[in-house]
Image (cartoon, rainbow, N blue to C red; front, side):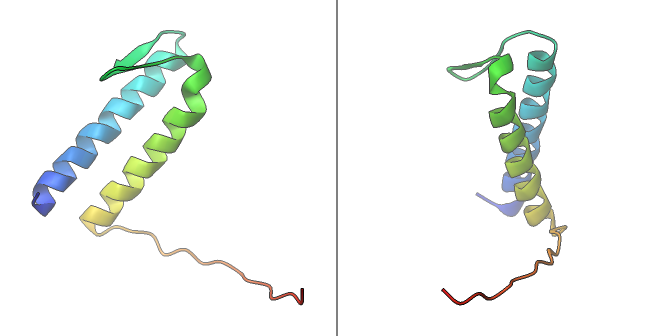
Length: 75
């Protein structure tokens, strides 16, 4: 796949997962392919939204720089 196709796929997937989140939040079920998502699946839906946002940012070149702190410890 080309980069443009990957971006289009990532946008489509992100849009579908956001729609799923809205549907589930209003007490409905939502279907993506063969999977039916319900209110109890909000955590998984949130994880997929985060994943597709990250994919899209990476493909579009807008990846975030993350700064972390490491504390070395003797074990």
